[in-house]
Length: 176
Image: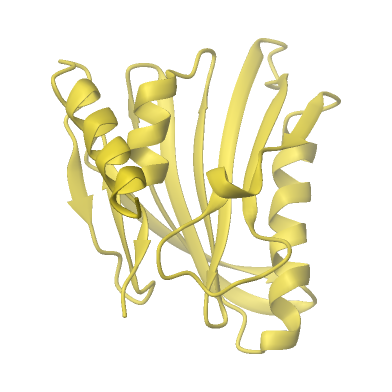
C-alpha cells in the first residue's frame, strides 16, 4: 500500500512529461536540502527580507511554462520557534498579493512532502484572486519545512492544469 502515492505521482509525471510546453527537469537548490521537479529551467534570485520578525535571505527559483509561473522559495529562519510564524507569513503574503479573493486549505494529505519536518502550518493552499491589472488568477502553494528552513512551492496562472500541479508538488522531497 505505501507505494501507491509514489506510483500515482510517477503516473501523473508521465502523463504531463510528454506535453510539448512542459520540459520537466530535476532541481536541487543549494542550501535548501530538497529536490524539486520543474517543467522549465528556473532562474534563481535572492533577496533579504523580514519574515517572522527576523531578517532572512529568501532564495527564489522560478520559471514560466505554458502560461504558468512555477516557483520554489526557501529561507532559513534559524530558530525552530519562528518556523510556524514564517509559514503563516508566507501564506498571508501570497493571499494579500492577489487582492481580495478566496483562499482555502486543501486536505492534509495533499500537502505532504516526503521527509519534511512536521509543522501545523505546513500544507497546500488554493488561492483565487486578481493580478494588479484586474485579470483573474489561480495560485496553488505548498508550504513545508526542513529543520529551520521554510519552503514555499508555488504555481500561478490564469488556468492551472491538475496533472502538471500533481507532478510539480509530487516531485518535491526533502533530502536526508
